[in-house]
Amino acid sequence: MKGKLLIVVALASALSLFTVLVVAQVQQAQPPRPGKEVLRKSPPPEERVRQMLDKIMSRMKLN
Image (cartoon, one colour):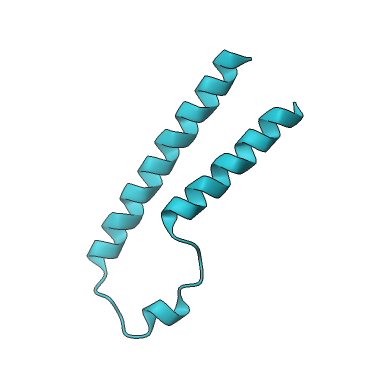
């Protein structure tokens, strides 16, 4: 069980790091448009990563 948990945490952290890097690259590539801050309602990448890890951990506890 601990090995499976370690694999899940490692995969989740690698995926989250990759996601953060991709988001940073995309944001650098696009010049900021006026009014973009108003349209952005999604949580920042760190919050999304935390939510994703919480979901994974709750699923692991259910199994």
